[in-house]
Image (cartoon, rainbow, N blue to C red):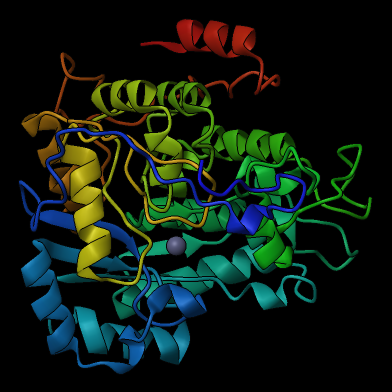
Length: 408
Ligand SMILES: [Zn+2]
């Protein structure tokens, strides 16, 4: 060592080890092996940075980028409601119905003053559907921040929202839902936190301290597990409603839990958006997950459309590249790719989204590669409401037992 470093003064932010691996690498393909549908994107600025500068750029430029990236269609989750929704549909979906689908949103700012917020949002959803919305986006504020007139947190499976979920089912609109957030965001921001640098940069993403008991009147955030139990309750109570769980069903750290939920709830689907870092640090488990649930996973990026981000996804899904940069920002590790077979890629890239979002929103139940692929059935028979996953979400024993018991 020519010049040694004093480990008592080296700062974490300055530590930048270079991998010395010498590996054969495919690199990032220019285009996906099959046409892709990005089922999770933000083109309207409703989530700020997530849209980049696309809300202000000509749609022709976006179409050109999509053509270059091999992206056939994009789902824009930024429709909101009312005039904003009408404008977003007029800008994207109406002139290009085979390139864009616009999802609407809730007016959750009124929940604290409107005791009938569920009925109100059901009415709003019907109006949004009449205006052309192709789905509903629900954000993580539900369960984390939204409070009712008594200043109690509104649970993800609060029955006051039942009219909304029933309306979505009646209208045949899928619900893209994001609840909770990475598990580490609910943990202390200490030296053991695997997302400590991200939390330091975004203190408002830190849902801590969590409250000690499941009491909606208690101040503080609910624990991660409590939100996920509510989510499972929601999926089970509304079997006719098609839910797409954003970010690998909102629990990419625990693919066994997500797989258990997929097995228990045929109305449940997931996208991998913004979770390459999580999937790619458990590549064997993630590959198994994609093979098993190939009919229930919709490709989505959640990144302002750009060539580099799309190509990184193609590399991740298609190649055998090991230990490469996932784009950074979430944790100090690299990822390995999934090497998915062609028939799985076709479904994940395009066919599942086409079926759910452009062809009527009827879930096609299937059970993995050897299963009843493509056969359309009712999500569940009357009187056989699926049971939610076990309470002990992070317990390997209970997860394994629940999975075995709920397999079809
Ligand atoms: Zn998003």
